[in-house]
Image (cartoon, rainbow, N blue to C red; front, side, top):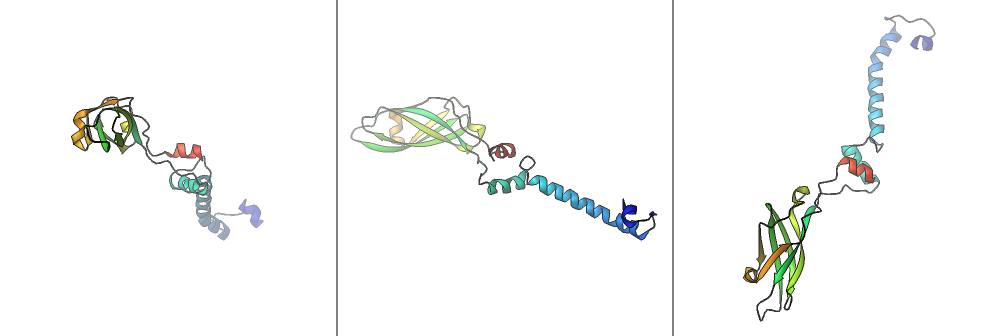
Length: 168
């Protein structure tokens, strides 16, 4: 092709051949870099930082890790003359601490409370027994009991590249 461009037969020692041989690797590297840059802007090939830029461009942020949640039933009563008290309820399920708050009014005998795991991610999912629990202020704990209504669920890890690309 170079011989056709010059218009005469070319030999290895011709200045045009030497110049072409020295420029060709840079030209090839430039094409490869352009190919990588173009593919990173294409959603199907984008990963890492390139995918983050596309998610910002389309205003679709990566979903963060989320903690598991569990619903429990608290039963009991308040001693007279207490009419209204707010509690912090903590429960440990298979080594994972779950916490929630509730307000208890006089005359209430049962309350459903949602507790949130202190750890984000899937590790707190599927737990189905309470190892221990506590209520603060502690002076009311003796008259209360806590029962798990369903296994913990809803925890998720930070969204991976494939899931983010699907949402974009």
